[in-house]
Image (cartoon, rainbow, N blue to C red; front, top):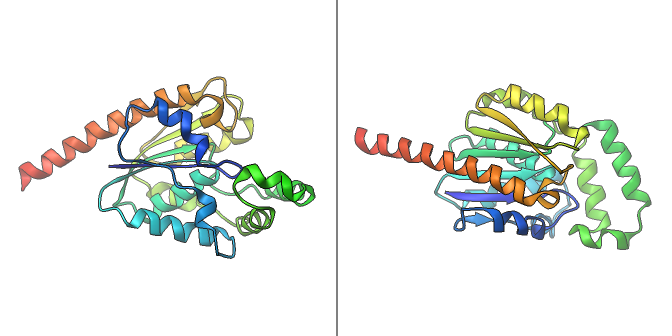
Length: 222
């Protein structure tokens, strides 16, 4: 199984470093840099998702997707459209639909920020604005009931902005459960990587055991 960790907007692949150190799983863990996926494109969500499909499509084995915020939306989108390949899903601080008012406020802030301030975000200012505009109408709420893989919804205890969305995801995705991470806000992977690592270790171990039983049953039946 491949374990794919997808960072959020404003983060880079290094945002997962401490979580990776905490994981019991050491092989098959991949952390793509999302800014590289948008290189040479128009900078839209659709471009980003096409690269997500290309990246995941190269693997013949089952996938466990774990994404935060923007990365969570990509993971949710992919799981809904490729249910046969995705066997486990972790959604951290993820919205099933983009809150339009929040996005407008965010875009206003981005527009007045100096270009130099985007250096640490992985994306340049033009790409961030293009990506944000393209996400305005994203809405996966009608897809939630069709996601049948084991799903872990994660929310930092201080992340009030995404708490309601986390509860909705847990209720609407059939095999979902919710974990609240203490001492963390929205960016759980950097604010409490050890706590997130413990939760992921339990989830991934249970998934590996579950997957092993399925494969053994298929071998016996064959």
